[in-house]
Length: 288
Length: 332
Image (tube, rainbow over all chains, first blue to last red; front, side, top):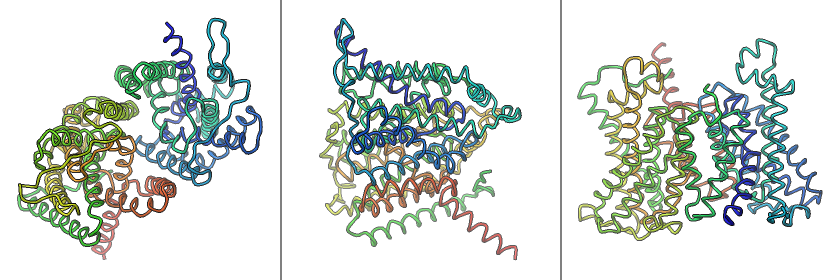
C-alpha cells in the first residue's frame, strides 16, 4: 500500500508532464499529419529560455514561463514558414522523419553552441519547493502543481476545440482539409496557428516538467521518440487519447522504474508494443 | 516514378559482368582506403561495419518502403551473439560471422513480424519500440552484454588459421573488405532477383501488388530476415575487429544515423547505401574532431538540404545527371 501511494503521485505527475508536452504534437499530427520528431526540441527551447530568464534575468516563475512560451513560438516561426509548410499532409513519413531529425540536430547544436554543454537548472519558486500535506499523506507541492497544469491544459484545450470558432475550423480541417478550404476556411492559417499552439504547449510542458525531465543539452534527442510514442499510443489528434496514453505510459514507466529500476524503459516500450499492435491507430485515434 | 535499373532480359554473361564490375569497384575502393589512410585502418574497418548496417537498412527502407528507426537492434544482436560465442570458445572469425548473421536473421524475423504488419505511423512506432526494447534489454542483461561497460575481450583466432589479426588492423581491414565484396556481389544479384523486384513493386504500390495476388506480409518478413542477416554480419565483423561491443551498437542514435547515411547516399540503391555510409563517416571524422556541436549543426543542415533538394540521395542524383548528360549528347 505504501509503495502504491508512493508510486501514484509520481506516475500521475509524470503522465501529466508527458500529456502537456505531447498534446500539442497530437493535435498537430491529427491536423497536419506531420511526424514531428523535433517536438522535444521546442520543449527544450522553452526550458532554455526559462532557465535563462530565472537565473540571469531574475524574473519570477510565472513570468519565466511566459517568456519561455513566447520565445519558443517566436523561434519556431521561421521553421514553420520555411520547412514545416512543405511537409504538411503531403509527404511520406520518411521525408518527415528525416527533415525533423535534421531540425532537431540543428536546434541541439545551436543551443549548445550558444549556452554551452551544461544542464540548465530551472529553480522552483518557494511555494512549490516544500511538501504539501494532503491530510493523510505528504507529497511534493511541485507534483501537485504539475498535475494541476495538466488538468488545466486538458480542460482549456477541450473548451477551445469544442466551443470556439477556431475549434470549429480546426475540426473541419482535420476531417476534410480540401472541403474545409472549399468552404472558405483558410487552412494555411489554421495550420500555422496550430503549429504555434503546439510549440507553445511544448515549451510550457518543458518548463513545468523540468523537475521530472531535466533540461540538458541532449534533451531533444533523449525524448525525441517519447512524445511521438505517446501520441501514437493515444491516437493522433485526440485530447482524450493523449491523456489516456500519457497516464497509462506514465504509470507503466514509473512503476517499472520503482519496482525494477535496472530494466530502464523496458516496461514502457512493452506497453507501447502491446497497445500499438492491438490498436494501430491508437487508443482513441481514427484511421485516415 | 522510380525507374528500375533492369531493362533488358539479363543474360548469364551480363550477370557475371555485373558481378565482376562490382567486385572490382569494391577492391579499388578498398585499395584507395589502404593507401590514403594507412594509419587509420581501424577507422576504415569501423566504416565498413557500419556500411553493412546501412546496406541492410536499404533492403527494408529503400526496397520495401518500411520506415524504421530501430534497425540498430539487428546489428547489435549480431555483434553480441558473435562476441558471446567467441568468449565461449568459438573463435574462428568465419564461424563468428555466420553466428552473427544467424542471430541478426532471427532478430530480423521477430522485428519483421512486428513491424511490417502495419504501414505509416504504427509501423514507425513499433520499429522504435522494438529498438528501444532491445536497447533496454542489452543494458539489463549485463551477464551477456557487459551492460554499460561493454562486452570486452573478444579476440578472434587467425583467419583460416593463417592470418593473424594484428594490432595495426591490417588483417582486419583486408578481411572486412573481402567480406564486404562478397556480400555486395551477392546482394546486387539478390537485388535483381524477381523477389527483390516484387518488393520494390510493394513499395511503389502496395494495393496494386496485393490485387495481382502477391502476399505482401510474408514477403516483407522474408526481406527483413535477409536484412537482419546482413546487419548481423556487420555487427559480428565489428565485434571481431574492435574486440569490444558497447551499448551504442543497439542505440537509437545508431539507428537514426544509419537512416541519415542511407538518405544521404540514396535509398533503393545498394551503392547509395555504401557510399552514404562512407561519406557520412568521413565527414564525421573530420568535423566532429573540431567540435561535437558544430558537427550536429552541420549534420542538421545537411540533412535538411538533402531532404528538400536531393530527396533521392546523392548517388541517385549523380547517376541521373550523368544519364541526362548522355542523353543530351546522344541527341546532338
